[in-house]
Image (tube, rainbow, N blue to C red):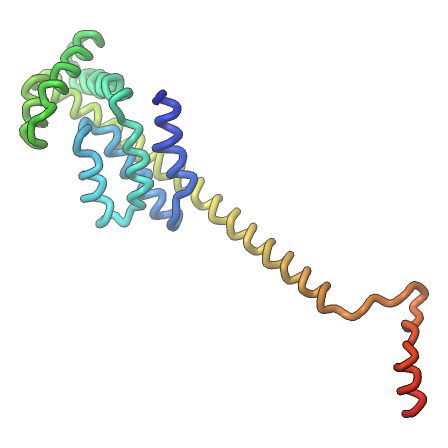
Length: 208
């Protein structure tokens, strides 16, 4: 599957069909974005599940946004974390090709091991000169992007809720207007004259 197809299926689709209050959707967007931009591939769903409940976040939205970090985007994201961290810590940075190869080898080495053993092996293989700047950079990027995601999702979800509420009110008004037309008095003929009586109605009026 292409990156655009992956993004559409796992991120855009769940967001468009998200249920819940605007606040819970915004919390879910912030949580999912924060977790996605941390070097926690392999345990991201677990982190979302642990933090989502006490934060009262929309977990399906959070899970959807975790997919911003995936096997296709992992190496570029980790390199971005690393670059930001080296800038903040004033350390020299490795070339992209060198770091990319090291991350790929570390990821292959960690496969097949237990969760915590795999993560420990991953960090040991990368080395502290890579892991520490990467952790610092990811925390900075994740926090900034999570704040932006929260406010963006809150604005979008609030407008969507208002639009849905207005559509519901419009449908109710249309249904009420349609029922009123059906139950209303018969239309008067042109000129305002009363409708003609049938023969039976004329005989009844005469007898009365």
